[in-house]
Image 1 (cartoon, rainbow, N blue to C red):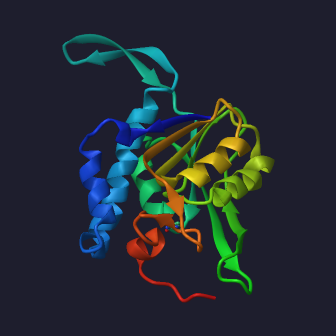
Image 2: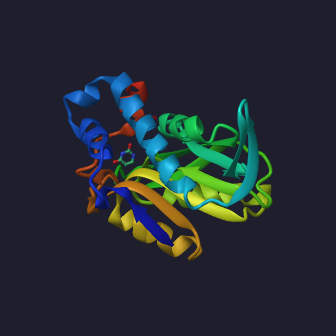
Length: 219
Ligand code: URA
């Protein structure tokens, strides 16, 4: 897998990331959602440089302009619910993309430190020959990303696959690296070293879904 870690080059993205992590600033859920969305927009721009472009001639009121444009064959798939702001950010730039949504959640049985990923809702167009962008803001264990990809397989074989995340933990990145083919690309805003016993990224930012949309009752 090819990994594009955007934090390697300091940029305005660091401001958005530090606001996401800051336990005082992150209490403003509108700013939290918007910062994830802004990171989605930056990643969309960086990712767009790896897409295929075709020559186009544009007629202006005063003449003609030759340019290259991307012919959109993108399907953007996000995992509910934390993925929604990242999805919006990507869709702000890939505005002609088709969209897929999947619900994947951690089901804790008796031991609070172990869980399995349960996939329930799935809405997806054909993926045959398309460019699939799979977005999950928190790449923790990597199990949700892999379970989502498995669930998408009946919808066709994409010609290219891009994974997009805001924060990844190194163990999760190692897990998806083993699960996906070598030509899959991961676009990630930053990478943290570890996970805690409950599978949360350390230092991370906490629970992205709760910070974006409010607390949920644990079931
Ligand atoms: N999901 C989150 O929201 N945060 C983590 O740290 C891991 C998974």
